[in-house]
Length: 92
Figure 1 (cartoon, rainbow, N blue to C red):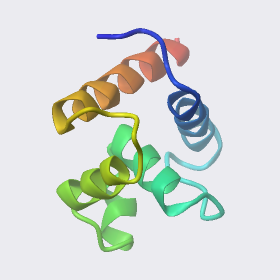
Figure 2 (cartoon, rainbow, N blue to C red):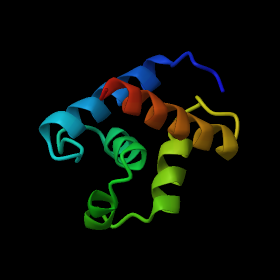
Figure 3 (cartoon, one colour):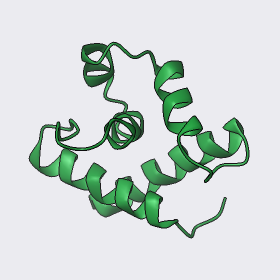
Figure 4 (tube, rainbow, N blue to C red):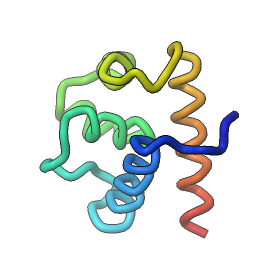
């Protein structure tokens, strides 16, 4: 797994920290749809996804298809795992 985050990855990690620390683990309504869905996926926020009428596969497809960052869906899933691991270490 690549330990270097892109600008988008760093931005999403920061938004995840903010959501976790200041918004009960939910994305900010002011963020773009892609940002909100990416944060919800990283934080496993099923409540948010349900409220927005997205399943996990639909949310993944929406975020994946909105960026050139990932070569394939497996790479995207690795990216989610990487962000979750970084988020876990940032809460220590």
